[in-house]
Length: 412
Image (cartoon, rainbow, N blue to C red; front, side, top):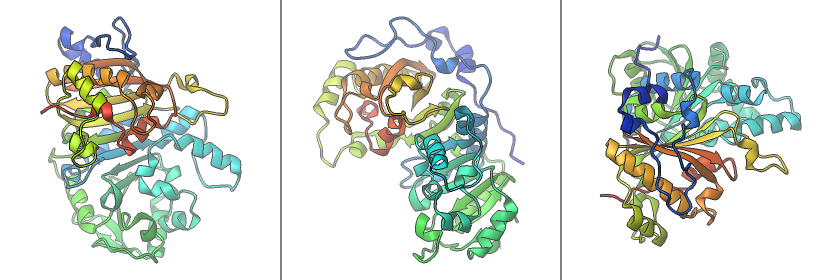
């Protein structure tokens, strides 16, 4: 059973527990090009009364994973999460079972998932690959929630719901996985305990060995790792009482507490990826527009985590539609800082940059992609709500393409 934990406070609860000055939505000065309301406005993310199952599920699994998974040498993206089931429900489509071969089915489920960063969760790249699906014993599109911690072959993949443990066992063993036992005595399977890779293996050649080892955590999460040592470490951590979890990593719990209750997907980026050294080519000068913005607002202090998130119902725009069709979808950027003062500064600085800088990917204004509705500081988090103004996938493509100029931390 999952260990008990204190659930994160919702944004409404946080606002009720801090000082009036800090709780008031931060009014951003009228920098040129910003899209901030002229009077205090309650962010849409504060208008929810009921806690979201998605965020409870995300909190639970992050508390079951050891925190060192996000302090390794190259965990640029600490975690990617998607509540596939909630997305289907929001779009009014049935849970996925299996492909029926019709173009209409491909269109429906493609539309439902293409605006979520599921490509970060490697198995989702092969949902239409019959050989791969048969080899692992389930289709990722049929799972309820999916999580990946880290990137590429060293990542941890986890899937909740929508799979049959008996069927998984049969499929994995038929694919050459050997029955194993974790350090805690739980059944597991492996076809490469030391991270082996073979281009002839139907699973390894698609996921570069990232799904070599598997076990079921808490009778609900199917977890895959590259090495069995990592799988063992997860099993041992989940059985212990330590609080040194991914959830406790810098900025994680704070940003999850700020998420909209209707959040369907989150993509987190470690704060040290936002430095000029990690954003621009080696020895490159700070872009003139960013330097000019800093001269007006001051530099952006260092951050511990950036989380981009979106609410359920996001989808591609149909032919002839414009972004107004998605006006009810909320995109969030949550920047975890080291102090409330830094969070207040970040809310002003990022909003100003958003209104004046241009995307490095499109060369057009960031406001052509996402329009800021609110910018505020709550505790140590600078929180931004956006309305979609351009391609719906922009909310996570900015991270995929390192197109994050407004969030570059130029302070000491």
